[in-house]
Length: 226
Ligand code: ADE
Image (cartoon, rainbow, N blue to C red):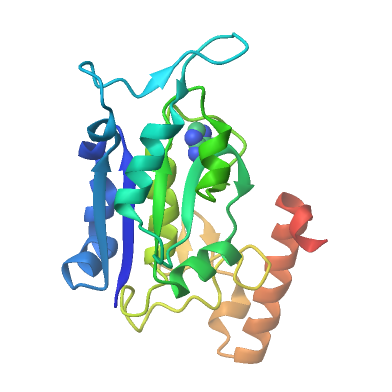
């Protein structure tokens, strides 16, 4: 069974978008993962296909109705579906490479994309939605966030990246940012490749890279060192 992603959204036409391109799209064509979308509005019951209503207690914006979302989730992910149910939201737990690795090792994900001021809290609880944020900024909706999450996950599915691409040295995989990379020409606009990298001494290269990784992480992401 390959990794199975199912998106619940008011904008299914946005998918696969970037997920259809490059190695991620090839992985889908090769059957290493699959993507389905469901139009949330199909689960509305009134003539105008309403999915939202005004917030209880007053205030700006609209809130996604719990009954409609619950019906969509139940149709997409009946009881016994082992896939986690994610809700893309700036209120969520920040996405990390560790969570990305867990998701890639699992059966897939059901992903709800918000497009409103919010979603009725009761459906979040009743359907066990895990709120996930991709960063401390606010997007217009969860669709791009869902694409970000899936791109990060799918590239870790075995066979999606070629054998040549190793994950071991990537940023975050060892808790550090990745060291700087160089390739020919030896001299570019007066800047040389660091000598150690052309010395042929693999031990020295490894030590240099480790030191550069630590220096970069200390400067840019001291939070990762704690
Ligand atoms: N929807 C809006 N902003 C978001 C964010 N930062 N992360 C995930 N989903 C979102």
